[in-house]
Every structure is written in structure tokens, then in C-alpha cells.
Amino acid sequence: MSPGAETMPCARLLLSSVAPPWQHAVARRQGLTANDVLTFLDPAPGVDVDFDTARSTHGEVALAYAWAQARDVTIARLGLIANLSRPWMLATVGWHVTGCSLGGQCSVEFVPSWTHSSDRHRDVLPEPVNRRLQWQLATSGLDHAHVATTAHGQLAENYVAFPDEPVIELLVTTATAVWQCRERRPD
Ligand SMILES: [Zn+2]
Image 1 (cartoon, protein in one colour):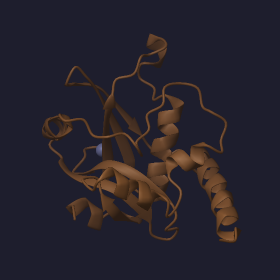
Image 2: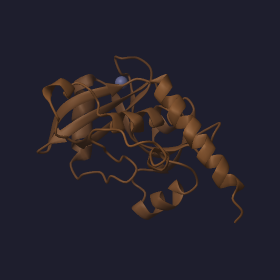
Image 3: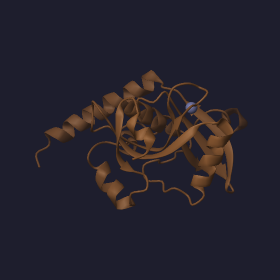
Image 4: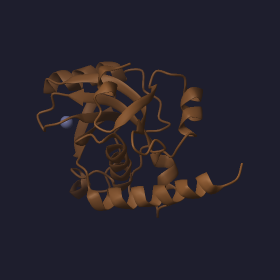
């Protein structure tokens, strides 16, 4: 088990990211992931990145350690996590980060660069990606989440998402209603 998994504020590791994809697919059926929850919301405009089913690229480990070294932080692989008080809240988290200068514990995802609709949006996370990170933050209890984009095998841009309570409330309220419905459904 990675060291980060034992110290997450309100979640535990269900399945390491190095487990085979089929095990992740089975484990995700034990609850609701960001993919499940976003299905029930209006589509948000902008680029989307599916953390649940994205497969790590071959060079991700090297990029992750380069990212960590540049910030003097420690990183550990995570995977599928479950919230402690609501064990049906599941999220896929790439890496757990400790020692971040922004304070507290955080996570980081490495994803391919997206095309910006304009320079105005260059510093802002696309809303679908933000919603996925807010679900991660709600599930894990981590203080914030980083996204590093990659292009041509190199680190490109960096983004940070802090908990956005109105978005988290929308996601958790929606997910709770969906999950209660599913629980009531006879087998
Ligand atoms: Zn951080």
C-alpha cells in the first residue's frame, strides 16, 4: 500500500492504480465515481478528462517524479479510493502528494494537454475537469488537487483546484439521491 493511502483525511485506498483495468472496472461498481455522477448533471462546457478510465501513459512515472522534484514534494501512487463515512463515494486519484508549499495534503493528475478555446481560458481549469477534481476532493478530504498537463512527453501547464463548496454540494447531493435510488432497487 502506498504511504499516502494511510494518511488521507477521509478516504481509504480500495485498489492500487497498478491493479489490472478489469479489477478497477469491477471495483468501481461498488459505488459511484465521478463518471457516474456527471452523467446525471447537465454537461459542463469545455474539455473533459476522464480520470476513472484513463490509462497511465508509459512515461507518466518519470514525469511524475520530475514534477515532484521541481516542487520538493513526496509523491506516492494512489488508485481507486473510497470515502470513509460514505463508502459508496469512489474516486480515482493518480498520485498523493505530501510536503506541498500550498499546505496540507494534495493530489496530482497527469493528463494530455488540451486545446484552449482562447488565451483567456489558459489559466482556468475547464469546468468538466474541475467537477471531476471537486468530486475527488469531496471523496478524499484532501486540501487541493493539482493537474499537470503533458505534451510531447514533457510537462506543460499546471493547474490547482481548491474545494469549491457549491460545486461539491451539487455533486454530493446528486450522488446521494442516485445512490439511495440504487440501494432501494430490488435485486
Ligand atoms: Zn499541492
